[in-house]
Image (cartoon, rainbow, N blue to C red):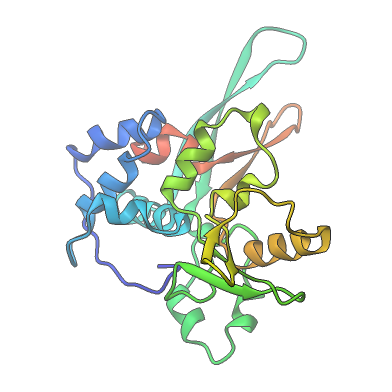
Length: 246
């Protein structure tokens, strides 16, 4: 896992499709956690525990389950709008899911992991820095001490529920429960950011970004006729969860 743990999983079965259909239809944010808790056989892991995982763990295990149960080749169809009309045209595609994977165990055991990380492409999974902790502390150049919690499914749900027009750049920090260390009250959650200078905000955002793992699995899709290119997250495709063709 990106946080260093090792799990053993089983192959999926037909009963699992009931849960995965909720994931594919984006109706239930807990569906992935429920599904993963069922297929992990090395130890007891509850859906509630998985909801607290950093989200790259969740999506990486989902990818590994798909490869383990159904193979690394994803065949799917994608609909494109026909320019100048209300019609769509459907094309068939294939994607090798292994291109998103990486030897995490070898990278984390390397004498100098930074050398191995430079070999990865932007879409490949990578380990979290400080994998043994969910809360990351940092002292700003001004001496101010901050701490954030890696984004988990709870924060992901809050982000999805908030209207786009009400979203601000600082929501990325609120979703990670950014805290600041005070003399009187210890660690307190930051609700208002006016106490930070512009330079401090740049430093905070940079630190958070460097200590998160973005694993959205963006797949490049090209229209063979118009050469138009789009990027679609793998988990937005129904065929990723239960394909009709293998």
